Length: 294
Image (cartoon, rainbow, N blue to C red; front, top):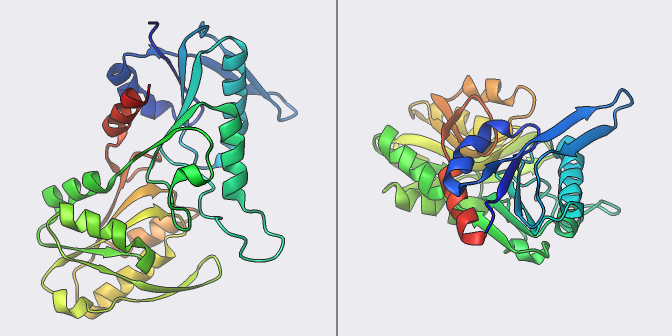
């Protein structure tokens, strides 16, 4: 059987090298540029006929990344690829999972429908499953989820003495409890009231009982960072040491990383999304998931 061909799409090139070796994949080359009018030129250079094609694209800033992804997938299929899969360490458009106000687009469903039409399988890291219980509720292709909780817990055990794991909201309890169990640490979850996209009020019940421990704020997605920042302020105000902050997907819109960085001891993230805080490597776990999937 021919080796798979792995193409790193624009913005995800830095993630590709570990996957080439782990999957014994051929290095794929895509020529990509913008025409003066803003349209995209894309060319698949490798011979993909009757071969497994793997597209690598972490979908932060998804609007700019989606069209090159679709062009690459459709071109590979037209050129005879046997199957086309997507490795998306960060899977976008999962948070709008209900119509909160009349007329709103439920973008998670639309995005899933688009990808499902163009791809044969999907591997991702800890998608934001809140009202959905599984990706199969909206994706019509086989999917595999890589769970980052053991990797976060391993980093915490190696780098933080006597940690107290703190989740951002009640919905995170199941995930946070897994990180805490793997790290042999107690955990708490914040109670959060959000008013608008950026304004958050929280409380941290029972926190004073753990003042002798080092707080570690954990979250799956850090975007505005306001919840984490408010939690950090409250913890320091209670007498805790400055918390560590460990996140899976460091989106950090605008000045969020700077604001949060002023309040915490350090920010640590996985490389599911490229960021200066990346310290936890999810690519070996992704490679294992892809190996089993293909």
